[in-house]
Length: 152
Image (cartoon, rainbow, N blue to C red; front, side, top):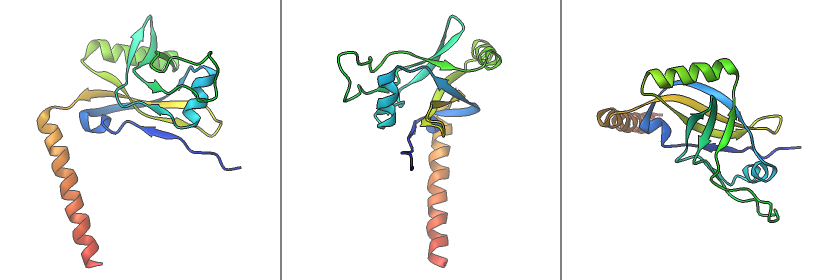
């Protein structure tokens, strides 16, 4: 049986932030939320993570309402709890409070067991000149690839 692979990415994250550390967290979801994610109807482009009472939540993650649900459907923009170990939570909270770092979701995927997971990263915001360097490096790489392609 071939499973439908879901991999929803946050494309802006790597451009706007410098990634320092990565984690994979589970997400506490309602029944209609996981069904909508399995249909691929979710977005993490504008989302970020915050701590509330020692627990980590993802804010602004959009999960469309499930098409076959009744009036017991979920709220598309609600806060969703992330499931990490106590050591990871303490480490992340300590790093965020001490320095001006933030936690950004990188991608949302379904693992082999059918559970929704969110890859998050501890990030530091890039300055404008760093973004320009990223664009310059990307364009140089494209030029080199074109040149290599012509010689083959």
